[in-house]
Structure formats: C-alpha cells, structure tokens
Image (cartoon, rainbow over all chains, first blue to last red; front, side, top):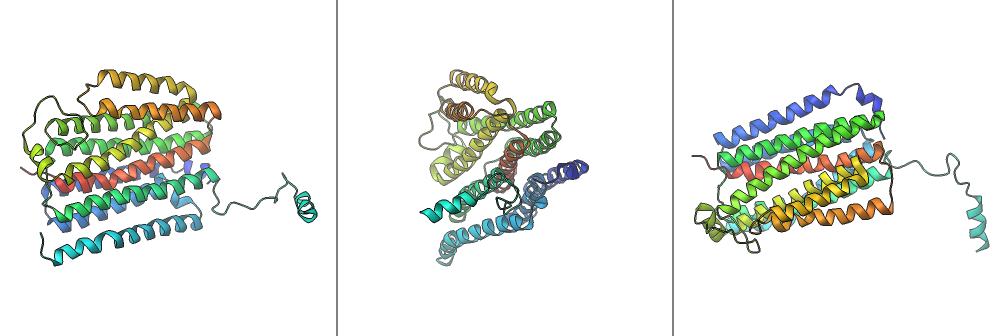
Length: 103
Length: 268
C-alpha cells in the first residue's frame, strides 16, 4: 500500500481532477449538441476525450499512477492487448460489408 | 518422503524474510480486485463493441432529445462526484478516522443511488414511449410514437441499449451495496431488505423494475453469507479495494455516455 501521508498533503489535486472531468464532460455534451463534426469524426473526438477522462480516473482516483511500475505496465499492457485482440475478431467483418456496398 | 519432511521442518514460519515480498508491491486483495476489474473491462468492452458493430450495419436511430441528454449529464456528474467522495473516504480510512470514513462512504452511496434513480426514471420514460424488447412487461397504455417504431424497425437499438445500460446499472447497484456493507457491516442488511420489499410492493407490475428489484434480494443473500461466515471490521485496505471497484463503475460510464447517448442525440 502506498504511503497515505504523502498523498494526504496533496488532496487538492483530486479536486482539480474532478473539475477537469466535469469540464471534459461539458465539452462532450457541447460537441454532441452542436454537431460541428461529421459522425465518424465526432466518434473519434468523443473517444479521445473518453480515453483522457478514463486515464485521469485510473491514474488519480484509482491511484495506479502511484503503484509500482511493474503493476502499472502489466495491467495496462494486458488489458490493451485483450482489446486489440477483440478488435481483430469484430471489425474485419464489419469492414467487409462496406466493401460489398451495403449501407 | 523423509527428505520432504526434513525440508518442511527447516522452514521457519513467522520470521522476517520467510516469505517473498509481493511481486507488485501491493497487498493481495488489491491485486485481486485489479485482476477482476481487468476481466470485467473486457465484459463491458465486448458489449460496447457489440453496440458499435450493430451501429455500423444499420440506419441507427437518434432518439435522445434534450431531456434525455440533460438527465444523462446529471447522472454523469453524480458518478464523477461520487468518485471524489470515495477518494476522500479512502483518505479518512487511512487516517483512521472512522466517523468521516463512514460519512464519505455514505455520500458516495447517495450519489450512486441518485444515479440509479435517475437512470430508472429514464428507462421508464423510454419504455413508456414504446422503446422495448421482448421479455419486458407490456406497458398499460399502447405506445405508438417514434420509439415504438424504432423497436420494430431497428430491434438492435433497444437490445444493445438496454443490455449495456442494464449491465452498468447492475454494477452500480452492487457497488452501492458493497460500500454499504463496508461502511455499516451487518447493520446494512435490514436496509437492503426493506428496500427490496418496498421496491417490489410499490413499483407497478407493468414496470420492468418490479422484477429488476430482485437483484437486491440476491445481493442481500450474498452479503449476508459473507458477513455471517466471516464477520470482520473493515479496515483502510478494504475501503481502498471497494474504492477501486467504485471508480471502475465510474470509468465505464465515461464510455457509455458518449457512445450511447451523445452519438444518438436528436437535434431539433
């Protein structure tokens, strides 16, 4: 377990992270309503914002930033690898239907 | 055999250095929770992939108007705020401040409950307007709006929407009960029992939550078995591990909210 007193002194950073998450959420809602991007570009932008938000939650709220590098890297690499494998299962088939000209 | 006995006898239990240091520099409960969350992220990943996969194929409806988006935004703010109160609860537990640990956990549970109630209201509204899947109880009035048409023409939409959000809502419900058990131990069990019975009796039988509320009964049985088989006073480590689970529930919503709601907004 990490040293509690080390982080107790810097509680303010968690309020900053919370504020940043709320602001990013507001940006997402604004983008969703203004629809300044086409659908695919909108999806990319929203996913990038979601990845940033999840990194803040995992890094600060879940304290992974303060864990040992071995644990940090092993968890991150294993989960990302699983998602890449899942992508290979799902999306080649979805791409095939586009080549057949089906909308 | 004699050699094995000899080797066993040479191990000196209870002395410093008798056991190896943990590989990850963390206690086993925390590593166990991280492994569970890694596997659970794949469950939600598969559901989100299924949602996206269906969306590629079909003319996807965009039924979420201003009211739904405002509601979902408030739900998001509730979850984000609950994560902050959870962090404060972990700090209080690490200081050994039992009163404030309980207060912060209670605040987290209030935000979580607000999320569940808002989500339940949203579900009931959508179902009442005709968005439904086979197996849901039939609403008393016959809906004939846009959502009823969507349920017939694009059944993938209600199926993936309800599947994804129900799985998340179940996780939030389990999280609230988990925090309640950590904060109040066996004193929390009667509260869950009362909520279960009240929910079953008060929610109309044509509402899906009339049956969904039985999830509380299952949680009650599991929590009771755990608390009576191994009663203990939960310490700072337990609060931190419960916090990991709670933050994960928040994390998953950060993907569901934009993908399900914001990508399907109805601009008028």
